[in-house]
Length: 432
Image 1 (cartoon, rainbow, N blue to C red):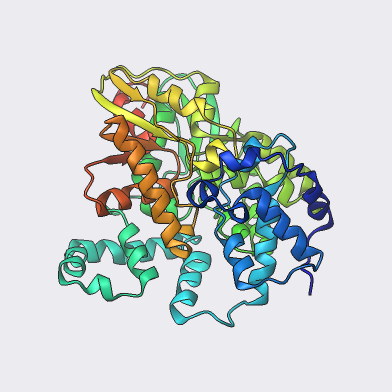
Image 2 (cartoon, helix red, strand yellow):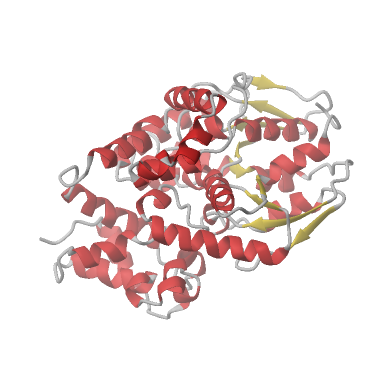
């Protein structure tokens, strides 16, 4: 039985001219050298599935699910093939056919965490509170030293290994912050869901940097998850509802804002897709377009505004990893580097294959652990070549992936968001 595919997307399958430009940038093809594990090969498989010429056998499923959806092929495609939208819809259709039927209890638990707990900030906070208590009680060390972590189901063991060291629970982000100097811009700050629970200090660093640059900040508490998790896991209706809520919440800020700013590449990419997501919604289509016009990554916003250079020197060697959903999905590569270059004393070393996926790719490191580890080791080997003791990356998933692989392999490496370094360089300077 042929797969369903939106007619517009089906027609876009024919945009591919088989030039092969995608082969050189595809992480799975680089690792395996198999045409079926390239974007061009997967497009052939998708078309054959939709036209009913092949069945979704285990072999076909393996090639399609091994895709990271990193969008590198899409960014380099001279024909503008919308590969990301197609692979997501095809995989969603395939997932529907086997929904729940062959899933284990652990797989269903992971699904619940991914789809229902992580995107809900309150639930995520409660889960992280338990994790903090466990870390404070020495549970991490006990699990590792006793060997008990080795007998956990593999997905749970990986989920535990990815968890960063969590500091004290932070106070809620203020709804409104004003700089002490002249206001240069007004922004809405997108807090995020699980990123706030795990990387709360980076959110506070972002606020300090915005204030230091004379930016008035509004962080409406009613904002919700960007919808990326649901969009990528075949729950488009949930993603659309979340998009509508966020458009309403940020649109209700009194006096309006110049931009909606986020510091997470994955969230930013999703927020910028609201126009496409709600294109057929009569009530929200135009509002979504106007919302998208204001969405900015923090580096994109600060460089556009004109950053006030910090004065505190930081003597360290840093390399920068391009997050897929910043470099490929949003086309932002220069701005984060400009932020780093504004810090006095910082030595920035180019990273070989900087824009190749680190293997995080949302939940990919749970569903495709072998390929995820291969890509993580490739990334860390390239970081080793730079001699840098610090690596900066602008996405929560990349920070988790690179950090946990560095810990597991015994590498002494500090992994941070560029905005963390910038906040350190400002200290108490500026308009705080």
